[in-house]
Picture 1: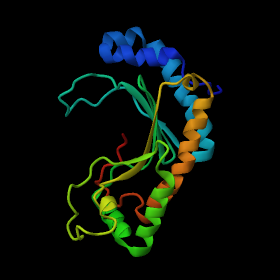
Picture 2 (picture 1 turned 90 degrees about the vertical axis):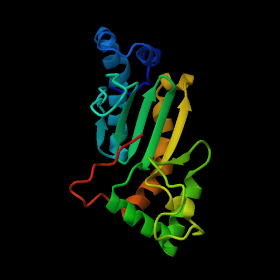
Picture 3 (picture 1 turned 60 degrees about the vertical axis):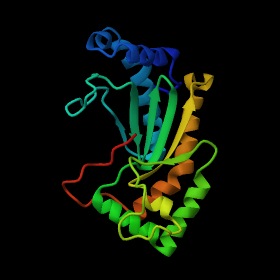
Picture 4 (picture 1 turned 45 degrees about the vertical axis):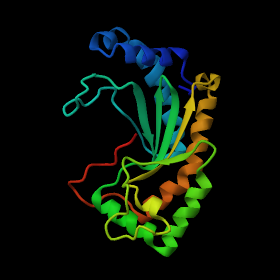
Length: 218
């Protein structure tokens, strides 16, 4: 199928799910989720995968084993497309690109690369080029002080404090969300933010720790 945006029913579904996050509601509206939410996301991801890479659409069920919140369902749908991430909720569309959280060995390589005169300056140029016009930087966590072994007056101390690094963009609900133009917004973001993902791939790479958890996304 060709991606044609998300119908208003998708936003209504998530608004109602926020009010009644129960299995009874889900089962009664499962067809709305499948047709109005999941199918458009699958079409979008499939079309963008040709340009940006492998796709994974996340399950709608929440992992409540270690959470005080026992609500069974996520109030957004998310998918990875290559190094990028796309999310739809009642509040609109969002996208990210990069490494939102780093395993310890990745974090060590990240900090060394940020501190290095050449690779750190390269990252500064990348960040300056991609941020603005709605794109910000985000991470799972960041330190309030300098990481151990790095001076608090380091010229790139703001980047050194991050425990991950990803570009982030949100779009509120607009008429274009229900049209094919939504794909253009996501593609533009992923293209613009790709230099950050490339820098991270070149200087951080995947975790080499077999026990490390994979990168989590927003």
